[in-house]
Length: 135
Image (tube, rainbow, N blue to C red):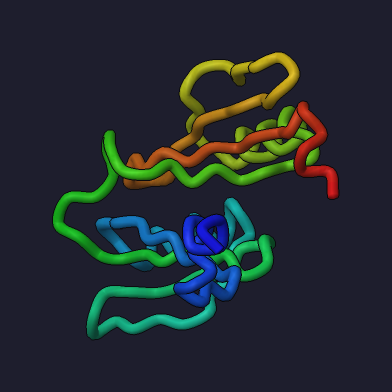
């Protein structure tokens, strides 16, 4: 019983997740997340400066919120799993995406690459090297 409580079972989580990011220009951000990452617009509410995008990950969405000061250090870093990090990184670099130095290897665990959206929100790609995410 205690284990279930610790895992949030009593809260009724449904497996969904929406991660919110602050952006300075909703149109620019929508274009970038759609054209560069291939995310699809779920809905947009201009009156509150908010939209949600569907990602290729089931029940994981990105919320974009217009704020006065967007991006920069701090906050959570959304980290997306990919099968082949080098190939995914090359595709993003071809699209002009800025990365934070070379990809990092953590032997037996993961390969990581940090990149930025137009508002300097840090995002990451990871490739599982441990086999833990291989179903």
